[in-house]
Each structure stands twice: as structure tokens, then as C-alpha cells.
Length: 132
Image 1 (spheres, rainbow, N blue to C red):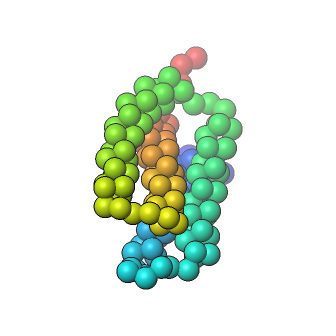
Image 2: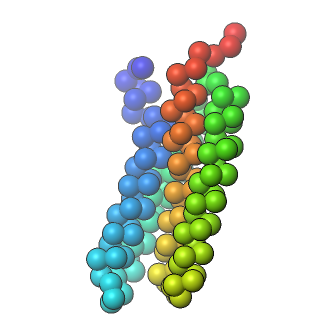
């Protein structure tokens, strides 16, 4: 692995995006039952979305990569994560979570639902030798 590849690793950027989402939810929870300052939550969530965007851009810009393996891992991982996030979203709605809190939690779930399959699929596909 070259030094440039380690700096622009899509898997690392996707993990960073999930960490920002966790920080967002932790900030939200730390203020319960009162409302957290919205600028803090939006900043953390925005950084999470930006990190995910960087992960996607670095993944797409990868020149030599085993894309078929990536897709073979990403598709079922996405279905599994989508099912899990759907159940979590249902729990939020069932618990009568409303307003800005629901928006923040839903956006965080979307970022996680997109980042986790990328992390799993990239972790597998980067070790598969490319076909000539």
C-alpha cells in the first residue's frame, strides 16, 4: 500500500463518517430530555456526510480495483443494513420521536446505511487480485 493510498482509503473515510454519526447521536442523547443545540448536531452530521462523500469520491477514483467483488459484497450487505435501519426507524416512530430529533436520527441512519456496506465491500475487494 502506498502512502497516498493510505491517506485516501475509502474505507477509512467511511468509518470516519460513522464516527461522526455516533458523535451526533451521543450529543443528542447527552442533552435528553432537553433539546440539544441544533448547530452542534448539524455540524457533526454535516461532517459525517462530507466524510462519506469523500469516501465515495476516493472509491470511484480508484483505478485498479475488483469492482465485481465489491458489488457482490455490497449488495447483500446493503440489504441487511437497510433491514436493520428500517427496524430502528420504526422504533423511533413507535416511540413517538418527532420533529428535529427525528430528522437528525433519520439522516444519521441514512449515512450509516450507506457507509457500512461500503466499508465491508471495500475491505474485501481491496485484497482480491485484479483480473488481467
